[in-house]
Length: 242
Ligand SMILES: O=C[C@H](O)COP(=O)(O)O
Image (cartoon, rainbow, N blue to C red; front, side, top):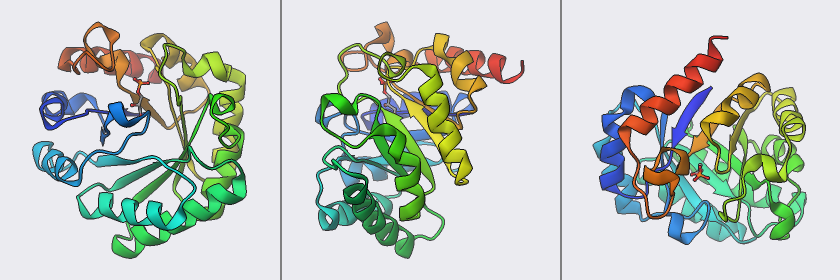
């Protein structure tokens, strides 16, 4: 299972760089603009320059509205700024059809620019709280739009966690659906080290984390700590080797 860590600034990315051996993907976001809030292009560029060249940089395009042209252009901006993983939170899409339309635009915009870019279609485990598309539809949305992975996060960061909204057996169904169409399955949402056993056993490909590796477990006021990244990685490896 790959470990994706989400810094919110160049300073935090430098802390990630100190722990680069313990993580697989550095994911640029702006948490004060939402769960998958988009950061500035120059922040993506500076973070790309700050982390080791062999560590992929991901960028979130935002908790996006149902505005396919706007979102495609934003996704291209993230790619031009140096991200090779492009994550889109389909917040404003209420139906699979809307989500597919948005993601098709993103895939075309990004892959015409850079064919090896990796596009992630993200939904929300707590979609019922925001009127967004059913989380179990994400693998099919990702597949039908030509994306590379389906992801779930939580939309509202209020202390509730991935498994509070989708129990492990439903997350396992999500992973299975993604694998059936040859896509990677990524899961996030206030995930803690204690969840890694379940996430590993269901075959999750990428786990996304912020709060669990911030001081005090606080994703907003706390800052990413290299020693917490190392400890999280050790626990992940412990489960992977069982
Ligand atoms: O993509 C991953 C998210 O940043 C997860 O953040 P969180 O662990 O604080 O919910």
